[in-house]
Image 1 (cartoon, rainbow, N blue to C red):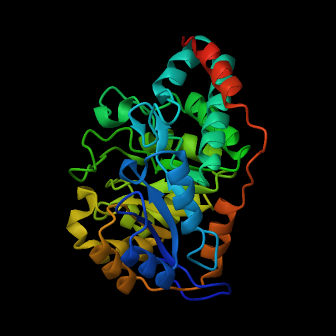
Image 2: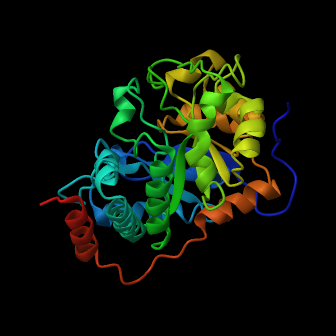
Length: 349
């Protein structure tokens, strides 16, 4: 089943990629490349972060490099996955804390998740960030890989959807778009796709449980990330991120997600079988991802990727990008009060 090709529609051309940066300031070669190819967006990691003033200056410069407003995102889930760290930035609890509270007091857990989303949104928007790679909607199973387990919002689809929705809505109140992950669900994976290609070999009936939280939030979510996992029930040959069948039939079809779809990071070993970075980027775009995510900041790889998937003006892509970046930050976020409310609900402190 064919994927979509960049090239049709109206609007300023963009390259359907999100790139990482090498360090805390833009280098000259990065600035020149980004101005020329106009990436759809950028992702920040710990190597790009010193303090609030530096991050704000970096995001402000990134905003000037294209004719469109780029996505500027970060992985700030809380717990083990937090690129902004104390003491320069507030700490955020892991998803498992909200899952644990939900088993005792569901309404309190939802309220705590909403406050946590608001605090995330207030923190990120103040830095010029407009998207966050969260919440994780993967279900937690007894065999879920340790790298993922504490990042899950629980083991029941209803609970995960309720907590994920609260986090998503809280961030949106402060102008930060949620990026749901990892479609179509990787909780059953017993291997880490950073180091190997997992295979989740269960039938479609079992997988229906895993996709339920994503389906519940699909209508309101502006963006989502696709996993590098093979699901033989849907496609035994390609990982989901490079599978036209999974993207069109399951993610766009059964789940009903119509927002911006990005691959997980293409440098992960789960995609090693697809070739070099240019081949991987081309594969995920051809399969139907709107953008390829490349995080390393390697300038040579970025140039190769841009040669493989050149700029275009696909109207659907532009509309989906605009939906992610359309949020406006609230002006009166009291971070101390938000943190106090969240922590009181979670019993922290």
